[in-house]
Length: 440
Image (cartoon, rainbow, N blue to C red; front, side, top):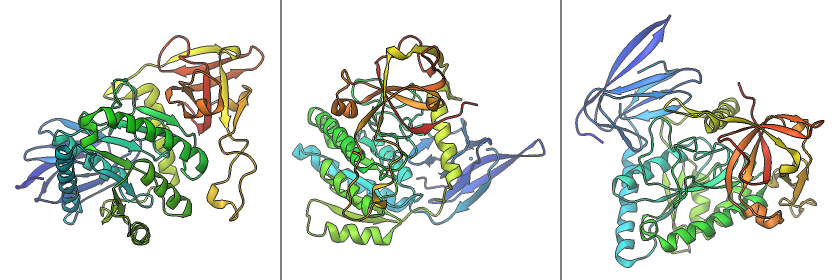
């Protein structure tokens, strides 16, 4: 944060004419703006210092935003909402970072694990934004924490419907976040992609057994990375989640605390959740439950906006972003060259909707082989790294990438797919979930 006033310039286009606005922010004030889809806002810092979700922005370069809700200590374009806020929780977030830094310094001295932070709360309270802030501040202190994304709804790191982990080694882009494409996403270890597992649903409680199986596998790999990497061990973990406020959510929280050895639970914007977590872990000296206020700039996002976010994430995976454009390839593959599976049979109701004491008759992790037909058209399909069709290995294998099914020709036993790279698929075992996309 800066100790002097920071001028910012924005531009709005009205009747074809661009309107430029200047804002001067006092210390510890925020400029908040919301940008609709199909509209572009340009932000430019004239002088002073400013940051967006913990990432500093430079003087003179223009930053572009579309379909975003942004809080900035300084900005240019057309916003649906814009205002300067004098009350922000940034001071408390900074204090949280300083406390985590103390734990990292202690871990460095004792050669133990650094802070393992789990961020929980209802939807639309700023959990992902807080994750970015804490990760960015840690990076600026020369630490490289591992970010674990357990929110399958948006796909912060890659595709929606995934659970992922990645080591934060580069500055988080203020325009694109963690990176939406294979070329911009941060990596895990020596690989060129983050560690990704395909869940296939937007809600973590929609298939609880599968969700817990995948988080368990993710935790094993993360633990192995921490055991062999001293920097990752000291830097710790930051775990983002979706709205875990019902009974199923509480079960997921406890599951994550055990798996990742969480020692700090941050509750955002939910008094009852904080009270329940505080009571649950009151006798556990290894877990500290903290409450932080959500930012006043956080707004509710309706289902339509969430759907547009998902569609944009999928499109960016194949076509990239304005800063990093990609050229996908249309490929025809024969039915006998691949085997495609779906988890479960039919549509599974959320676990929380089942009567108390009643278990599913159909296993939530039962793999069913899918015969290609027109129902696969417009589906997002994950390519598994599994070397066998064994059910457990296939479910627990990480994902090599994704393809998009554009057409299925059952007469010729061929399927046309959109792929990030040319040539044969890297593996024959494919997984399909509930996500569809209409290419436009």
